Image (cartoon, rainbow, N blue to C red; front, top):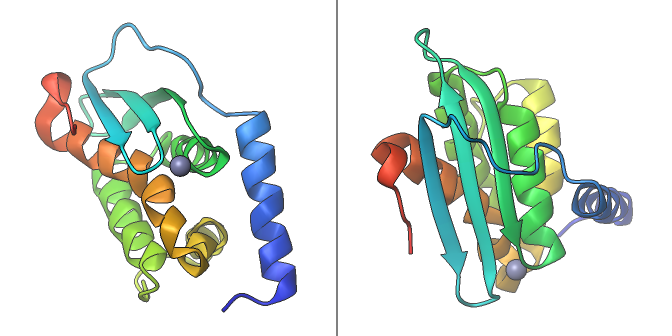
Length: 152
Ligand code: ZN
């Protein structure tokens, strides 16, 4: 279980990102995109990214609607993945999906781990895990399947 200070931090981060989403909007020249839907809650997320020739995520944006957790998680994710290489992004995605299930992710860097741990606080609320992981699954799908991706 989370202690009270982590729970407060978790709520602050969710509120901040859902009220002031980072990287929100369409991206016309996307090299990859994906769409995800969480039917349990009605959340929808679209992820757009530009991967450059060096394999770096040169730009990333999202659009979506749904509960605060789903949109905050998408915002936090785009904030963390912008500028990373695809390999780094895959490590972060896998790490977050493990943390959200309440598993460990010992291979993550300290700073990344701290930020992901806050969002992964959702593992204390099992009904909301699919809300928090929607954007991350959609991102994985976008990278794997490129421009025609749909995860529905
Ligand atoms: Zn939701």
